[in-house]
Amino acid sequence: MSDALLIAAHGSRDESGISEFRAFAEAWNRLRPDRLQAAGFLEFARPTIGEAIETLVERGAKMITVVPAMLMAAGHVKNDVPSEIAECRARHPGVTFHMARALDIHPALLELCHVRYREALADRPPVPADRTLLLLVGRGTSDPDANANIARVSRFLWESYGVAWASVAFSGLAAPSVDGALTVCRRLGVARIVVQPYFLFDGILLKRIYETAARHDAADPDVEIVPVAHFRLHPLLLRAFEDRVHEALHGAPHMNCDLCKYRVRLIGREADLGAPQEGHHHHVRAPSDLEDDHDHDHRPRRSRRRSAPTEFATDPSFHPWDERLLRRLQLVKE
Image 1: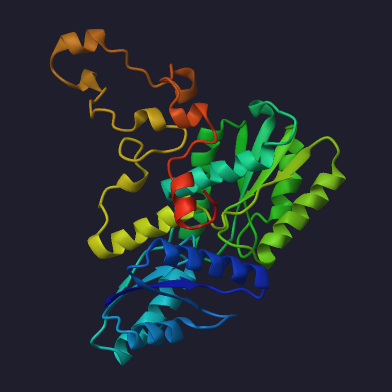
Image 2: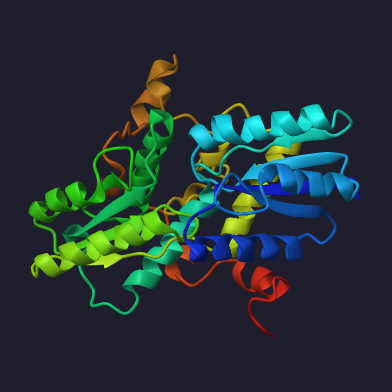
């Protein structure tokens, strides 16, 4: 085998985070036994990225695709990982290196957010959507581009969850903090605040998020604060990583097609998938008969008539990846 894959994680001082990442890497390896694979860390754990690449080269790798196991493209993805790759490229001029982009915002991750959200609320008394607030928590970086993407995710989830409001917070390096955001959110008059971390694996920062949420929940009996689990190993997460590998090797569209509701199944907008490309701004065209018949509707989407719900919308347990991939990964038994 000459093609190889390296999953590059940041690393953590929290052993549970390292264990979750290793479990994910092993599952991905079982999914693609035809491919050489290894995992490496920037810091706090071994092997390092450089050590993992050396192992792949020793095993005969001639082309290595490095996939950052990091959600947003901030300093680690833009500087640290490319620097590690550059050093290895200089040592091994006969090896071709590709680097995939960060996971960022991916339709499969938005669906996985829904899975974890439903799990968190499954055994709790129902609260009306217009009395519920979503607080999405990102890692927080010094890069405004990465922080802005957390705000974009919150908007996707706000529209698909149907909650009354959505806000963002960060676990470090960016404002508002989880503590500050919850202090403000509790004053908005909602009955429930759902705290959802946009995190891949366990770690010290994630534990701090849950500790802060628990403290605010205990301090205010009038507002229920519900913590949501992070992503961890799931078929949808594997799908997102596989897509990033495919992009690195075969290219990505120049348009924003990876989040286009007409070309991918976006949660909450499933009925728009595959809809014909028919413009509705007929009033800018010459024929007057189009103007007369067209209902030029720019009302907010919630006030418009919606299409019939899809299978996913009517059955929250449905997802075509679940059973098939879980069996393949030996995470469930026949």
